[in-house]
Length: 227
Image (cartoon, rainbow, N blue to C red):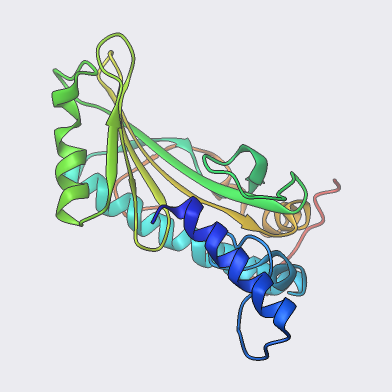
């Protein structure tokens, strides 16, 4: 069953429970997000709880990123930060859709790191390192593009994150991890993260796999960003 069909079936079953007045169904009417949480459940959470969930998701994505990086390139290689992944983006721009999502009530996270692979040129064969890693983990994946455009292999993890391995014609290799879309107070979460983020974390640079800016905790000092 595809993710989209799973979401549809889940929502339909929840509505059936509600219409029959069944107690203890444990389901929420309407679509659930990539974290298996319904919109009403998320909206009932205080911002602190939503923030902690976002921090956990960021850390999980960093694990997936590092695992992919060391599988496709030497572990000591430096990777350029393309997207730090520190702040939530509007869920409406996520790679996947979530029914009822808006820029205010949903978000997704994006991590992208880049390196250069000598001899790579965006051919189908250049995707082999990523495809082997996906296959070894038994993650379903699909590959597309080659030749004049970038070649890309995309996989879905069991916990519903998207991992992407891209090789461009100029030899640039991008590894990306996408989390979401998730239900949540996008603006509130953005301010909460920005106001607690050390300045040193805000300057993209380069790093080796497993090296990343630690996510702040709710109890860390907060400075109102003024927006």
